[in-house]
Amino acid sequence: MQWKTEDTPERAAFRDEFKSWLKSVLPEGWMESIDSGDDEAYSKVRGSFNPMGWMKTMGDSGYGAPLWPKEYGGLSGEPWMQQIVREELGSYRLPLFGINLLGVGLAGPTIIEHGNEAQKERYLKKILNGEEIWCQLFSEPGSGSDLASLSTRAVRDGDEWVVNGQKVWTSIAQYAKFGMLLCRTDPDVPKHDGLSYFVVDMHSPGMDVRPLKEMTGGSVFNEVYMTDVRVPHENIVSEPGDGWRCARTTLMNERATLAGLSIDTSSMMGGSKRDPWQSFLDQIPDKSDPVVRQEIMKYYILQQVKEITAFRAQAAKLRGDQPGPEGSFAKVFNAEYNQAKSSFSMNAAGIGSVAWRQGDKAAEDRAASFLRARANTIEGGTSEVLRNQVGERVLGLPREPEVDRGIPWKEIKRSG
Ligand SMILES: Cc1cc2nc3c(=O)[nH]c(=O)nc-3n(C[C@H](O)[C@H](O)[C@H](O)COP(=O)(O)OP(=O)(O)OC[C@H]3O[C@@H](n4cnc5c(N)ncnc54)[C@H](O)[C@@H]3O)c2cc1C
Image 1 (cartoon, rainbow, N blue to C red):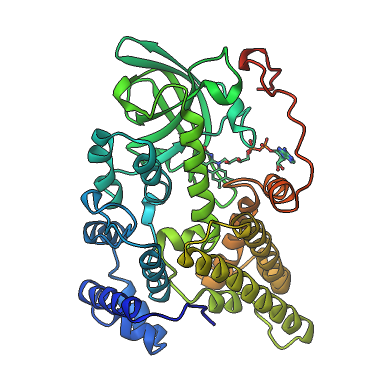
Image 2 (cartoon, rainbow, N blue to C red):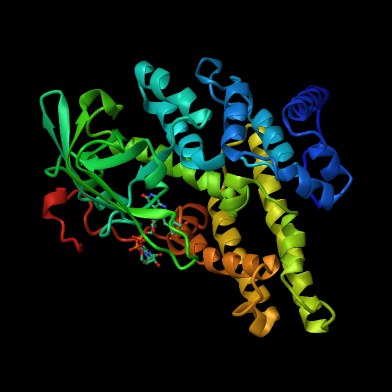
């Protein structure tokens, strides 16, 4: 069951307009095959789908980011427009962001909020239409949850900054044209105050991107080594020393991107090739066993809880309320739900979960979902750290002790 708000006449008109537009740009038969539940016909039309071409089509239309100002490629619209676009894209199994997930979801909103006019002009449209892919150069080997402790240094040299340091877990850096780079520019002040936020060209001399092999077999994230990388001063977002404020905007948008919808980043980037619940059912070979059936029902109920919680958050957003605790809660809940559900389908498949005939799509999906889900409780803020936030901000529990508060960064004891 899909939870949706009831449309006012204005919203119904926008939904119709967007669906007509979809019909005019999608391959013939795409929407009809989904509306009629004809999976075979859908698989045929899906074959002709080009994700990069789709990003450009969405980006050029304004529907790719309804909240962004018109002059930068959006619709200067309302949150409910964004919601309707997301609902219809989900219904028609289309990607929400495409490969430029980090550009559209994180970099764009940060530049809109903190960037200057020249930066908005230069970057935003090419983010939206997928012409320039972005990555997020925040985490370091010694700084993840405690991001503000990071060590990568940027030192001013005339009209440029010289960057030295190492980042890690940098998703899609190998495909990116630009990175959102958080650096330490002043080690003499407390950790949050000495950071600056740069736009860095990933093809600059001194930039070394090394893909990491993951247990899924893929290589999405990377180590990035920077040796004397020169970044023009005009690439600083906001002011030197204001990096933490800009980074918080990026992180808030990251959480919203991952939590507000679904934790399944592959469907956000590539669109669901199949109905996700049906794919899950297909991964369970024997559905006649009563215990297995009971478990399937348990996950179905939890799925409804997940969707109703997301629906409550969306409804509050549509009313114009401030974001509530649903964001952190949803991220923790979705991540743990996803892990438990994918572990269950592995257990239910028994030996079939570790060995299968070549080309068995359900078995491949089952193993891939299980392995990918391990990252869900880490990416975009770990479940432990989010629980701390819920404890402090929602339940009013005492704050975590901050042993380094007010101490200049260079005097703080650090690992890494
Ligand atoms: C799939 C994936 C993609 C990613 N992509 C990017 C990217 O593109 N760019 C980027 O910059 N980063 C990226 N990251 C990195 C991610 O942001 C970090 O992994 C995350 O913030 C945790 O940091 P860490 O790995 O250093 O773990 P640590 O912070 O070292 O944490 C280790 C353990 O200690 C726990 N812990 C830490 N602090 C506390 C505390 N105060 N209270 C209780 N427990 C605590 C954590 O929950 C965790 O279990 C990605 C990570 C993943 C998994």
